[in-house]
Every structure is written in C-alpha cells, then in structure tokens.
Length: 515
Image 1 (tube, rainbow, N blue to C red):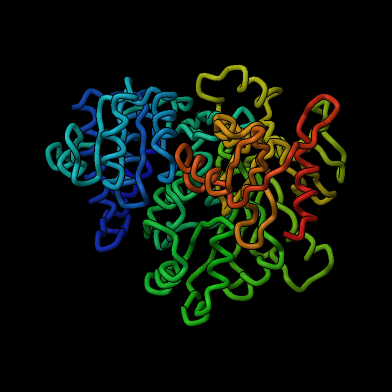
Image 2: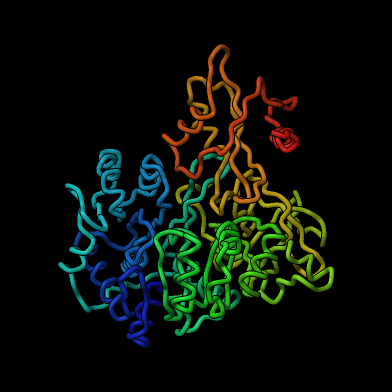
C-alpha cells in the first residue's frame, strides 16, 4: 500500500474537510490532493521516477506535507532534513543519498545556490518562493503542471518512502530506511494506541515536520483530520491556536511541554478541547510532568521510540499519568510505559538473551514499524538488526507488569530540548581546531533543556583558547543546536589504563563542580 493513498482516500470521502491551515492559507482535502497530484506530475515531467531520492529542507508550512505526499505518490523516497542543519550538513545528507532533487524554504535560497557545485547528483532545486538563478519556483511548478488526474504509483511494501537520518557513535549520520509498510504500520499504531483519531479531530503541528511531527501529521491525514501548521514552536502561539481552533491533539518534546506549563498566562487560555498531548524524544522530569498535568490537564501520552522505529516502541496512556495514587501508580510516571500493540519490546543481556524482570540490559524492539536497515551500510545494519531485533543501544529494565524503565543510553547520545546531539560528531569537528589537543563532549543535566552539551577541552601547549572560540568553531561547521552551551578546560582528560577517555569521571567532576 502506497502511504500516499491516505491523502487520496481523504479527498474522496471527506473532500470538504480542512486538510491544512498555515497562516492565512487554508486547503480542503480536495484542494490539497489536487495540489499534491500537480506537484507529483511536475516531478514526473522533470524526469523523476519511482525510487529516486528527494531532499526536503523546509521549515514547517503547508508546502512540507504537500512535498512529502508528492514524493510518496510518485514512489520516490523523501529525505526530510532538520531546517536548522548547517549547509555543510545538508551537502552530506544529499550526497549520501544521491538525491536527485531538493525542496527548500526561501530562507535557504542563497545557501543552496552556494553549495550547488558540491552536489553532483542533485539536478533540480525547488524553492518555496523567490527562487535564485537556476532554481525552480514551487507554486509555478504546481500551476504549470495542474492536473486533477491521480498520480499515485503502485509500490511494494518494501519500497522506500522515507530516509530518516540519525547519527550514531561513528559520528556520521546514517539513513534509517523506512518503507511504505513501515509508515503504514506507524500511522495505524498511532491511532490504535496514542490517540483515537477521527475526521473531526484537529491536530497542531508546531514541532518540526521533518521528525516526529511529520509522523503525527501522516496519521492525521490517514483519518482525514485537520493539521494546523505553525512555522516554529512559540508557547503563546501554541496556546492561542489550541484556544482558537479547538485543537484536540498535539505532539511535542518535553522541553515544549515544560514551556507551555511554565507560560505565565497559561490559565488564560481555554485548553478544554485537548484530548491527547503526545510527548517523547527525551526524558521528562516527573515534577515537570506533574506540573504540566495540573496546568494543561490529564491528556498526556508518553512514547519511546527511535528514528529506526519511528515513534513506535512503548507508550504510557493518559489514564496512567497518575499524580495522586498508589505508590506503584505514581512510580510508573518514571517509566516509558508498555509495548505498543503491534510491537515487541524486550530486555537483552550481553549474550542477546532475554533478561529477567528487574534486570538491566539493552532494550530491543521488533515489529512492523522497524526499519529495514541503514542506507548502504550493510555492516551497521547487520549489527543493529542482528537476530531480527532492533538493538537500540538504550539500557533499561522491564518490571513484572511489563513496564519499561530507561536507565541510560549506551550510545552516549545527548538529548537537548528533544533534539539528538551526538558527542562523536562534535569531537570530530573540534579535533580539527588548530589549538585543540584533545576534546571530550558530554551531556549534563539541565532543568530547562533536559540536557546541555558540554565540551571539555585540552589545548595544545602554549596556545590560548577561549569558550567563545570553541563555540564559534562549532557554529561554523554544525547546526546551531549542536553547539556546546558550556566549555570546560582541563590540563588532561581522565583515561583508563587502555587510554579510553572516562566520560563518567568527567560527568562526576562537573556535577560536583559548584561553578
């Protein structure tokens, strides 16, 4: 089944339902489907075909979902990218996937113009507005190729639909291959477990559509609901939208939820229409969660899942977000919930055998939402999917009732404000600085961000280096959200007898530091 059929079906059965609202733009399902078919026809007329990869470097807007569904319908594989990526990172993503085309917001016109020579595989550059020389205009493509004919092609269940790039301990991002079958399973599971969507439901999309927001939005389209799209997350704008549009569901990372609960005038807004607020992507402190429940209501659903099994692992229902209850009920706020309906989640020991309840080990996942592998990385695919299970690299345990508790992340990923930051990636960059001898990047707890990125630096003898220099060097090479928020300088890094940097000692050192 082509996941693009969700849009076609909605246009047939609920043509007058509002599909998307973005600012002053509003499209029914009939209108959105016609625009998507026309965009798909434009891509076909440009020579793109089933199996081609297409980059999406757009901020949230109505265009993002149109582009995504045009890719789906044509049988192309979408590569949604975080709009905060540095141009050098965009080059890497597009070249790694050998993308034939890239869509982008007008803010990035000059960036894409500057890096064109570094993209030998990319022939077509489509700007959302005001294209630069050599770039195509998004709206003109739609109008020049206007058609009411359905453009959807047949796909096999294992045909690629989405390359979800996620970094790892190697530092270089790798594309998790998500098929049409994966996305169908993910969206069906969303409605089965997280929120029971109907055509009358109204979703708010303020988190990036390139990540979890896009998965949420696909599920909403599958049920012919309405997506209210905002370019950025701003607490005031989100609260106003919930009040004005009578939003019934929302997805966000814990930092967003905390910002909503902490907003001084949160009680001035009518949030009674909310039925479900799904959160995940990072740990959330229990005290913050309790405050959010008190301020916003008993509407929260927690999820655990990685890009390799997008948004699909475990869940904790609103009814289990208990503030005042038995000791066991309250303790479950610390958990990630139980297995999703069509998903198996187990704890494996070091020999890849299932651990007993209460025993810590690696969290592994199996089910129809799990990726088929990493794009052109057979060795990493074999390692991660060995034995037919997705080995997450996360450490946790399962209690006797089946609730999963996360303990640590063996891959050392730092989750700051819901965004993944991978230490090795920063270390690779900082190691190139002419005045840095050694560097280690760690995550430290932070009340606001969940975690912050801390760079611990040893300078070369006789050379001076300041915190601003380190941060700016990162800013010149990486996305802004990956920059360290704190830089510490040491004469040497603690190491084991085998020369391995002891990051746990560094964390302990700066946790105890009163600075």
